[in-house]
Amino acid sequence: MNRFDFTPYRRNTVGFDRLFELLETTGRSAQNENYPPFNIERTGENDYQITVAVAGFKTEEIDIVAQQNLLIVTGSKQSEGNDNRDFLHMGIATRNFERRFQLADHIHITNADMADGLLIITLVREVPEALKPRKIVIGAKAALTVIEHEDAPKKKGAPAA
Image 1 (cartoon, one colour):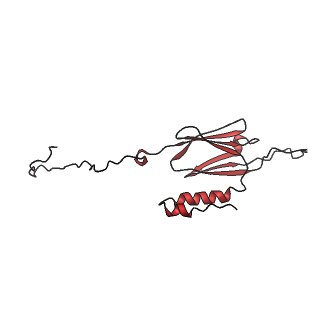
Image 2 (cartoon, rainbow, N blue to C red):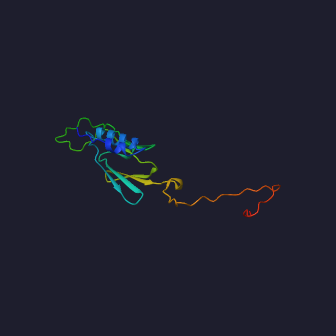
Image 3 (cartoon, rainbow, N blue to C red):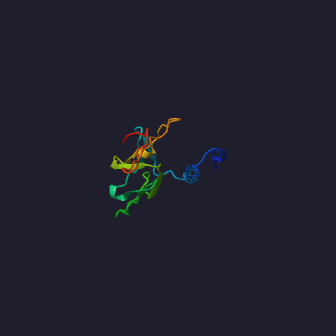
């Protein structure tokens, strides 16, 4: 088992514990997960697309559940009434599956579509304005609002409201 040691990074970072735990658990669980195959693409600065190969599955046999920071794609193949078929070769895998994708904060699913045996899930990152990076000017003080009462005498040199 290949395990990457995050100890040097943990020493120099604060608040990234969740990220390191995610990387460690994903590495452990991804060893035997090969079905169904999938692609993850970045289609724009804040746009992503997950494509899952679901050949042989119908739309009603696939469930997509989005929870906080987790996307679960489940396929449950309905057994067909032709059990008396005699396959000489069965190369199309139609077994049930569950594929989990860890999502970063502020990633939302905008669309899911199925065409040509491919399930295409479109995602977008929408970071709230309050969480976007902002430049802090060194030495600048915040503008203070002066509240004056009507009965209080005005001080000389005080800004007029």
